[in-house]
Image 1 (cartoon, rainbow, N blue to C red):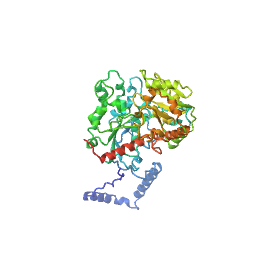
Image 2 (tube, rainbow, N blue to C red):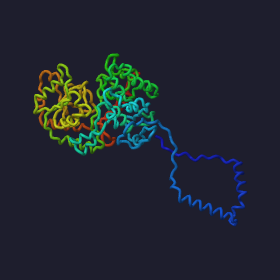
Image 3 (cartoon, helix red, strand yellow):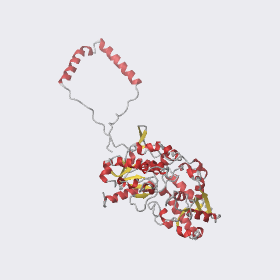
Image 4 (spheres, rainbow, N blue to C red):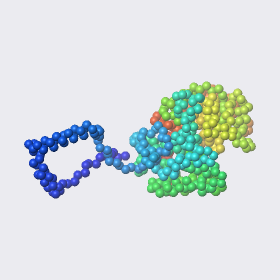
Length: 505
């Protein structure tokens, strides 16, 4: 931004008329200004007395005048409770606006990001309508604290006191709020769109469509309405039209398949298939591996450290944890024939001395009701079984690794082909892979795990713990390179490479 400079005082040339008028006033007063005149001394005495009273009663004067205002593009609004990473805000129409000048000072080799200031219907109003976002229950707790949710007070019984304040009841679909908050305070954010290499669209797509995904008889038009309105607005923005969307990106807080409806009777919204969405890069918790514009980022977990020392305390805690169980599984069957989760549960129940189960049947694990039991199980186990969820991925992968437990995968698309930028490049260094078909044909999970030496288990756990910073979303912009930072570095490098290559219209 340009420095604020105070303009020089405004002056107007004196005209002869003004000079003559002043001269006539002086001539008239001249007899009374003589020090030999009695009225002169009386006048000076009264004047000095008034000046003395004024100096004694007046507040101290400012040392400098306020600088003139310089207009600049308005930053995007902050909704709800700002996190500790804010250094300053200004209130406009009851909404706080980030005005932290430090975020533009650091070097950004791959360019800076401009955050669109969108109409509130695309973000703020969606949050204010939190009681009606889901057909079954209120989402207000889930969207509080910028998507971190309510503080997880009850978890203090199983985690150290020096990190208990970093835990929240974070919903797995809160990505849009978390990224919006971090973007507003991103070190490479610019308030000048002409200097931006990338443009962020703070539209809460997943929250907007959630109600219509689970409402019986909701029409395709209802599920598409918010996305279509957003793209209509975007089509009026000059920087979008200039690039055809190639340098624009958005966060979609659900899996890619929730936005890929191809015909009226199918599941989800058709947002990704809309023409203006074609060249926009999407950050999602699960990507379509065949779509270049999808980038998968870690699911939000409940751990959001506010300092590097808090993060280190957690890593030390899980590294020193005594593991009493060889492997564990937290989940429930899907209730159909040849259900793979049912096979895993059967293997676990047949090895009660080696495997621990947290049964999530029904609604036992919803809304954090079994969060303590799940976390304690992961903390106590060397390995955690991670089958696919309702789709190929599941949040439990990251909860498991956060606890220092080694994940066991059965589909390569569950992690290896999803989160390449966030996990070690050598899968065997931090995880175990057993093909799901082998398990269905009778392969014993315990026997496979028994072949891994204690030394290798130790090395694998160390690798998992080393990568914890890369799979969490911190409550700070200082001292922690977390999943957000990695996602932005990945995206900005991609945009820079795109500028040198071919781009279709």
